Length: 468
Figure (cartoon, rainbow, N blue to C red):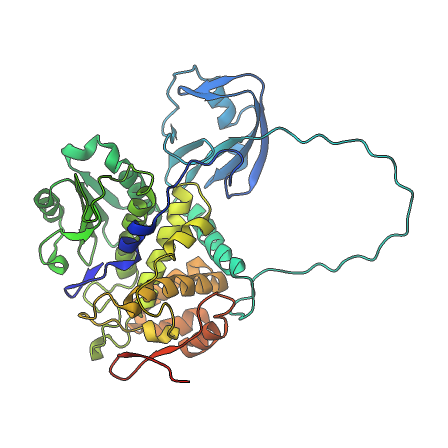
C-alpha cells in the first residue's frame, strides 16, 4: 500500500518468499468449517456437470444459506444429482472446480454448499453388559471460551474466535448491496492466471462493496498503460500513485487511489525474484488472493472512515496524531486477507495465519510494546518496526475481534467518520480506552505468544534496546 509517496510493501511481498505449497484437501484432511447439516446417502455412482460423485454417504455443509434448501429429496443436492451427466446447473448455480477440498457449489459470493464423501464408518463391536457400579461423581465442566479482554488464555481461543466472528458476519452479508465493477483486459480475460484474481475480487467485493459511497472498481490487465486508462475512464485517479501502476509485488504491479479504484498489472515471465510462475502456481495462490483482498480492504477502511482526504494512519505529523495507528491499518488488512483466503481456498484459518505471520524482519521481531507501532513516517523504509507492525497488528486485530466481534470492529472505522479521532472512536465502540487496551494487550503477550518487550522507540522514534 502506497501513501504520501512511501511504499508500504507489507507482509505480503515477503510472504511470496516463504509460502509453502497449498495442496488439495482430501476427505482425510480438514473439511468444511461450518456446522454440518447432516449426511446424504447417494445410492449409486452419479455425475454432476461431468464430475463424478461415487456411491456413498456425503456430509453436507452450507455457507450463507439454510440447510433445508440443500437437504432432503427436494433439496438442491438431490436436484443436482437428478440432472443428466453433462447438464449445466440451473442459474445462478455453478460448480467451483478450482475449490480446494470438498466439492463446492455456489450461487454467488458467500452462498453455497459443500458435499464431502465420508470415509468408511467404523465398526461398532458388541460389548457385554457391564456389572452395575456406583455412579462416579460428575466431573465439573470447564468453560474454555475466551473472556473478552482477558490476559490468560489459549491462543487458539483468540485466533479461532476472531475467525469465527468474521465467518459468521460474512454469512450475514449475502443480501447486502453489491456495488462493484471489474474491468478485465482482453489479453488476460480467458487466462487462468487471473482466474483466482477475478474470483477473489468477486468474493471480497461481495462482502465489502456495500460500504463504498458509489462503487468500487477493480481493473486487471497485462499492460500498465491500459490499466491506467481504464481507471481514469471509469472515474478514478492515481494521484496517490503518482499516475503510475507500478508498485511491485513479485510478479504483480498494483496501484490504487484513495477512494474506490484498485488496479493490478499481471506480469509475464520472470518475477523480480527470478521465479517463472503466476497465480496458477500452487506456491502463489495464497499470495495472489491475499494481496488483492489485503489492498481492497484498505479502500474499505478509507470509505468506512470517510477519510479520502485525511491521513490514513499516523505519519508522525501533527495533523495525523489522531488518525489510525499503523498496526491497526495493516494488521487488520492482514487478518482480513488470511480469513478470506482460508474461506476461498477451503483450508484452515490457523494454517493461513501461520503463513501470514511467518515473515520475520531482520532485527528485533515484535519486540516493542504495541504502542510503538502506531507511527510510521513516510521515509522510514522497511525496518523492523514497519515489518513487525503487520504481524503484531494482525494478532492485535484478532484480540479485538475475539473480544468485541467483527461487526463492532467495523464500527470503530465508521465512528471515525464522525469523531475524526481514532482514540475517541475506539473507546466509544469498545467501552475501554486505548490506554487500557494497550495495558491488557501487553499483559497478554505471553498468552498471545509474542516475544517480551526488549526494545523501545525514543522521542525521536529511534528504536533502541532496553538496558537491563
